[in-house]
Image (cartoon, rainbow, N blue to C red):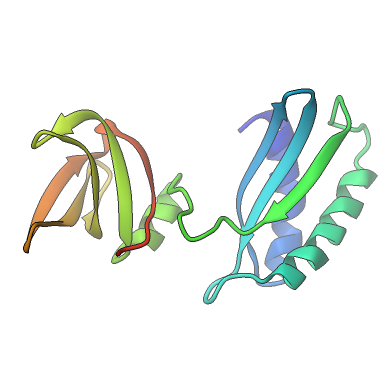
Length: 158
């Protein structure tokens, strides 16, 4: 996280938690000539709806406007949203939440001839994850070292 995103996380976290929400991620990016401050929040169980996001957006906007000195060098567009069904798995808390869930994992190097896997996260520790994948009509456990995981996210099983 950058200094700006860390500051925003420090402002947003207590606002979200007071409402029973969870701050998932903060992004501060420049796309073309416009800056965007994207804040992802969720509520468990069941997720967060658009009305709750709109209410939180107003609270966050007010708090960010009160910051002095202003940490934003340029005008920006504030976007609050849920992380969606296929939210990324970024930290240890996300990994713990993903246990028992269907996930997608992309790797830096091949394992069993593949660089991507989808399956149910059965177990994990600091060094590796165990993913139950379906190969044709059979299920197989694959152990993946965490150091070779390039990215991971929740996935929708079809």
